Image (cartoon, rainbow, N blue to C red; front, side):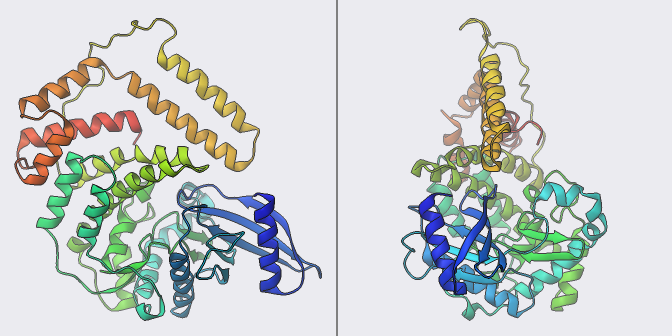
Amino acid sequence: MSGDLKEALTERLSETFEGRWTLRRVERLTGGASRETWAITAASADGDTRELILRRDPPGRENTRRIAMEAAAFDEAARVDVPVPTVVDRSADEPHPGLGSYLITTRVPGEALPQKLLRDENLAEVRAALPYELGRILARIHRMDVAAVPNLPDHDPLEFLFDEYTATGQPVPMLEATFRWLSEHRPEETGKTLVHGDFRNGNLLVDAEGVRGVLDWELAHVGDPMEDLGWLCTRTWRFGSPHPVGGFGSREDLFRGYADESGREPDPDVVRWWEVYGSLRWAVICRMQEAAASSGGDNRLELLAIGRRVAECEHDLLDLLDVPAGTTDLDATGAVTDLFGSPSAGELLGAVKEFVLEIGSGSDAKTRYRSRVAAHVLDIVAREAAVPGAVRDRLRTRLAGMGYRSEADLALGVRAGRDRLEDPEVAVLIRDLAETRLRVANPKY
């Protein structure tokens, strides 16, 4: 944290709590590509201490209206017994001269790291009970008074998502096909409530007693309450676990908790529609994060890396919509391996990766995290460089055989309705294109 930021924060805490407060500990937390998050221990002149969390928009991307909405959402959530941190302070209608647009809350105990939540044996008992508890918490969220939370967006979800999609890059065949499927299979709206918008593993603080805090309300909006249930079940938020509800357990337990708290039984087919929507939405968010990298900032590398995660979403959507298996063989012959001499690109990138990780190993937590992101990006580049030329040529030939010069042209053909997933040739080609991308972006997925 810069000296100017520390000074502004110290002054603000002294005004908020009265008396003179100092910062005893300041730690930048990893994760969260859209905002900075800091853990703070503040101490008073009398020896009192407070454990706090500061979340602030990156300089140049301040949004005080969203901060006001999120702060009000915390307050209203607490009223209906949703476990949330307490809001200590927030920016006013204009960004604070030293802090920008920010939100300060109490620090709630518990673990938020998904990998620990899913694998820590000390949490095994509470983990099994989480789907039911999360269902009850979601039902309470959907009882929140919309009028108590200002600046809540209220839009048609498909239209809004399509607008964001078209503004953030080239058309992608599988994403186009999913938009069409969602439009053709759209269920009746089940209600209109406050929707958390990002209720998932990773935004929950959990300890041996259960859920201690629901975090990150910045995407809250007015919509169908089943959106939150579908988002929680989206494969991305299972982090490799086979269990559909955040990696914790079954949909049946989630639905039972929701019904016991609300008196309404969720329709599994409706939730599945929102699960498909959720995978598509995450793909669009990945594209948005990639686009945000153009504005610079110290998280530019992470934002660019997130852009390659669209391939994971394509894979999930292919499976959700039962698209048949593809045929691409990345080991096909035809790559020219010695054109540029020795060492190979893969060997060079591997050496750079080792150097980056070595630098990061002796640094602070944020730098270690960024070095791991950099190493991941180097792996992507190395795998892409190793894709045989024969694979690229074969995919181009198949596109040309269907009358398309590029994959983007095929995507526009899907949008126009000329090509559909029901056509086996189209379906297999779309899967082959997507799986080729995935084997480069994240072959372990």
